[in-house]
Length: 194
Image (cartoon, rainbow, N blue to C red; front, side, top):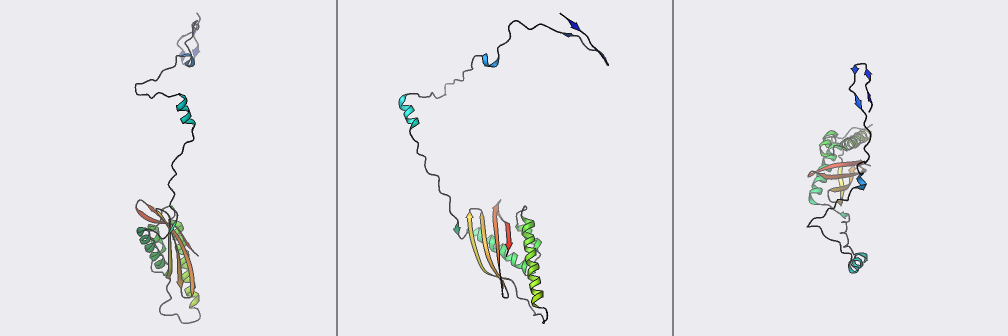
């Protein structure tokens, strides 16, 4: 046997003893006897010809339930939520409410887009009113934005889409919106004014 001692900057290290490999090495994992996992509750496989024929026969699975198609109209709660949101949008367009108040009725991830669309619509209404009153005496009360028609569709449970026809004086606009149900609260995800 050979012993070696090295001198390191911090002082001598402990001696290292080199030993020869034993003549018989331990078996590898793949050479071990397989572990048998048998319990009293284990089911035995049946390899009889009748069982194999039953396994090879085509299996018939019951048809998956059909997904409900989009139906014109919506649930009562969805209708109430859309009517409330449209009423607030009309108040924003008429200048009775700031566009930022729509933020609390919107999904947090989509709130900035909803508020931006409402702000752009309110600015467009104000510009149209200013342009209509140039050169002549303004009326006591400007023509308000009003809802002509509202159509709802619930493409899937928990989501409702609406198309709204708006009128201001002689101009007609369209508004499209989508609301989704999250944690029992209807929130707007998309608002588009055309």
